[in-house]
Image (cartoon, rainbow, N blue to C red; front, side):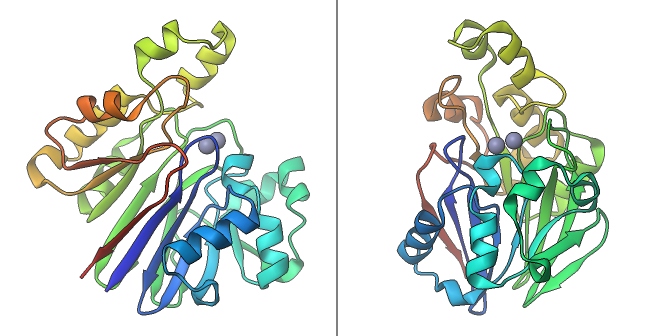
Length: 254
Ligand SMILES: [Zn+2]
Ligand SMILES: [Zn+2]
């Protein structure tokens, strides 16, 4: 049996856990270490079951406690090769112990317990940002978050995944008429920003989710420029589950 949880998603912190045969991996750690532990516990996960942490990128809402996590657990923390090569201030600030520093390159597969994990580059204003494809217990999960654009390879990979976690960050009208100054609006909607509800919906069509009925979890909703009911309306016709900002959701699959 595979179990998985959205421990939190959105600008207040992003973290996901996947468990197969009693072993688990984390994607992102954008919470305090205390909150991460509490949320794992609330989902019925033993922190000693965690084998590794994989980061999509180094913005604090994804990497906040990665350093503390590594120092407290001694576990490996993976970033993409481009992210590691860039090694900017955000990477240095994580202060990872040397033994925890791990790199994953797009196209390579990393094995961690029963999991095989690969990454693909996304388009975001954080060097080497990436998404992940995770296989374990006969199922494949794909996570696409914090990207201003999608490409045909992502569509192809999403077609093959059993479960998709897809950013649906903002509603175009809400962003345009919301509280953000024009410069910030341009950043959010730019090629290195975030996916809108419309972009997410088009992606799902292109990846055949209206025909396959496969589950999609809409994640990383903006607090100011989106809300769950707007997303749910936009995703009419899909087997969509909207993850409200900051909430925890636990799932299992036989
Ligand atoms: Zn980001
Ligand atoms: Zn983010």
